[in-house]
Length: 323
Image 1 (cartoon, one colour):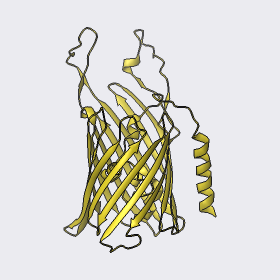
Image 2 (cartoon, rainbow, N blue to C red):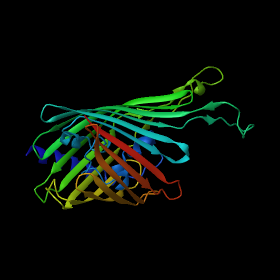
Image 3 (tube, rainbow, N blue to C red):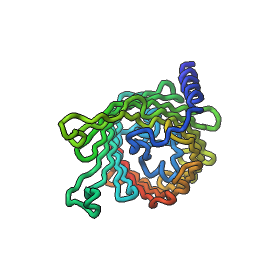
Image 4 (cartoon, one colour):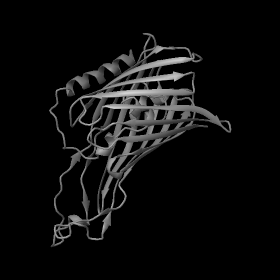
């Protein structure tokens, strides 16, 4: 009864926000929208109900409770315009039904040369942009089919001498149904918290601080369904095919639909593809991965390629180590 109550409340909230007007361009910390992990990226972001590695720290913290081994996870994204996006996650089982996790998201630009109206080719002065989100997560299996989790995080953006910081949280849940093992996942991300830039470059000539606006974080609700259409409940099956569908409702833009497929040969080779509907840049993605052991340490290496249309293509790589 408890699990249905929680899901009902979350669904009611999602319906209440479904008619919100588009607020494109009105939020800060856009880097929080960039997905982490090559598995999810290759499947077009259709992973809320399918994520099965520490990338759940980003996609669905409720799914963490099903990770029964300590794991270290790293992901790197070559974003467009020379921007680097990195993620590190650590998950630790505590007892039979609890998981703790730590995560770090970092977006960096490298050095950017300052330009002015009179020196449009550059002044010889360089600055950089750095955004980070540091999170601590906890998840619990309430039953063998239902789990919930929450993440608290510190978010900071820095542009040259200016910076802004705040706190926010995510809440997620995962349910495994009786219908052929179909999984339902959902998460609210980046709740609470506003960012307001302050710094020495905002001082007026008389030394007074210029007034700057506060901007909300990019709140997002994501609901997903995943189903193993081949190889369900057969760990030793030579073939598995998973279909995943996600719907995303951002607080500052249009809803998007994410479609993903994952084929697994036994438990060591993976091929994936995905497609995003109603996104202004993303559409087709694909990738794959291998799972192996080296010096008795299990690891999984994944790769993803995504076409961002008018923007550059984006490539991602991620590595998971169990210990």
